[in-house]
Length: 235
Length: 62
Picture 1 (cartoon, each protein chain N blue to C red):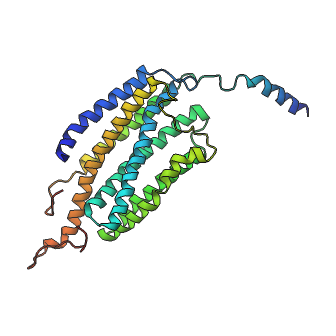
Picture 2 (picture 1 turned 180 degrees about the vertical axis):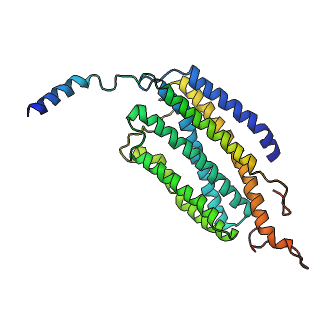
């Protein structure tokens, strides 16, 4: 299954991305007020959606790890955090670029933008923590705790435009958006989803390989008994 | 006081135009945005390829 996904997903993701962005850039009509600048939406919105999805996976893995420690869960948490940070950074950068012609500034301390900035800083801290802690078990537990705390920001980002007065518009729905704009947005969103799965899959392999190499170190030494992980209790 | 009156008159005159304009051009912002997106995907793919496991670990399989 994993091999099939790794082989089939790249052409699917690339095909969806080319199609979605071509329709968004060349076929979809310009916005009534924002004109052609609105076309940034077909990359900005999917990037933020997918970032929130990847970081939700990180939250689930963090919770699961604390109840049932596993190197696989820890590796998936690491992979989803890094990929979520990638998509989140792209989303925030594109939002800033979109803000310049529409709001007049690249950045303002608006509730949505501020909570998004907090998200990026939180997960940069999460990734830094994983780099700094050498003991694999401590690293996994501490990063799981940080992952749970950082995830508090996820629903706050989503509802920030509803809870507070924000320059950022509230969420649209297919009922409030021209169908000609919904199609490229959906295709681009599925393209980004395919890329997220692909990236997480490959990053997970790398992380799991690193974990197994770390815990296998003592096994390289001669031993009479059965080989065991350096960290008892973690499978 | 006269400045306030002038501002009031200007505000009333402009009221009908609020929200009626359309941003002209802006393709530069669009291309930069898509360039960042495609570039980020390409660079991250490259980083994953460079970091790929060189050989299978001795431990249990995935």
